[in-house]
Length: 397
Ligand SMILES: C[S@@+](CC[C@H](N)C(=O)[O-])C[C@H]1O[C@@H](n2cnc3c(N)ncnc32)[C@H](O)[C@@H]1O
Image 1 (cartoon, helix red, strand yellow):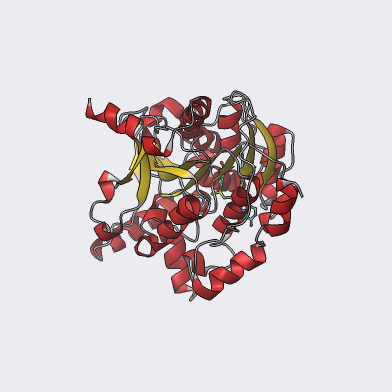
Image 2 (image 1 turned 30 degrees about the vertical axis):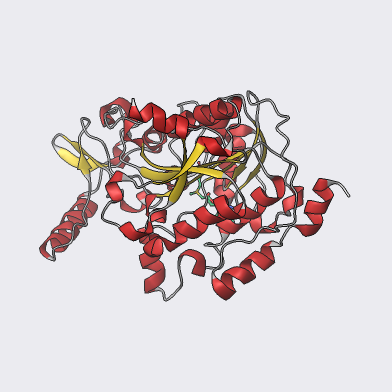
């Protein structure tokens, strides 16, 4: 039996992964007897990649930029698929739970910004208030990570790039992240690098997201630099936006009263009023509701919300990007997306790492790493990651 056929027979089912999840919240269990073929017979200057939870294709733009060829995409949202088709000429597959792992084409790089709702602070508090579980307890959504794990286990891509909200790292006293990290490293055997990146160095938006980059063989990899200083809002504004984006007196009064009420109660909630010299707050998928997180001050007028095109720019999408859905859907899609130039820099670094040599195990030392901005969080549960000795030596200089 070929290696591929034996993998097919032995690959654990997604149903089984869900059972494990429900029963004991244990990490995804790869079949220890499977002997995946670890060929490196691909050209790293034209890697085949897949775009999971593709949304409107932020990963796709970035990886096509390094010569990549997208061989599979999936998203179950009708309107995101519409935008995806308009821009890339292809309709993504639907719900990943309905796709058989063996029907996904083999690929060199797996990309996936898996849904963040179960892990985000907003998602968690909403679910708690609804009496539902969160993280891995959320059977329908929280286990989408295990769909990714299953695909990695079956196809053994040379690398993967995953993205999620920063809160993934601290969620459930870091247990969620620990399970994800250990599944990728210990169970699936990948060398994994993680970093929280703020997009403000490439777009005028404060947006922190965690990236996990993994390599099948141990490879030297460094996340690119993202300096704090970046462009300001003025650089992405349209010269003459439609007056409909200016808030009505009714909505503006409501937002001011709401903010005042919360301030009096000692809460920090409120609108985010900015000028063209500022960096905005994080654009959320709910921006279409009242636009309160990013309101642009205007002389002698109520503030206005950003137009969909300005939101596209705020997420680093080129002006050639087609927006053919309603404003509501467009705001939601950009608020859910990755910041394209952030991923473009990662894509270049991943492609470089794949062109470089495979390291010996001795070139790596096990090190404890901690994001400097998260020192206060559960210091007893630091994630473990590999850092190459080459990287350490460079840092010491
Ligand atoms: C955080 S967004 C990712 C956005 C994407 N990275 C981009 O650049 O636009 C997560 C996406 O996962 C999709 N999604 C959620 N559950 C899914 C499922 N079971 N199967 C396929 N797609 C799913 C959502 O529709 C959403 O577009």
